Length: 67
Image (cartoon, rainbow, N blue to C red; front, top):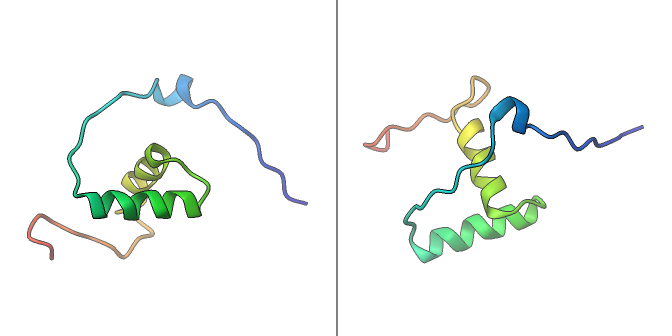
C-alpha cells in the first residue's frame, strides 16, 4: 500500500521567498519540461534540484570552472 501525505513545511523551513534569477530561454524551457514531467512547478523543481544536486548520495560535484 502506498500513501501520500501533504506536509506543511513552513513551520520547519519558514515561508518561501521570492527571488529573481537570469537564465537563457532554452535553459528555462528545459527546466519547465523536466518539472512538468515530474508533476512539479518550476519553483518546486529548482528547490528540489538545489537541495539534491550535491547531496551526500550524489556523485555530482561542480565548481565554477565546471570540473
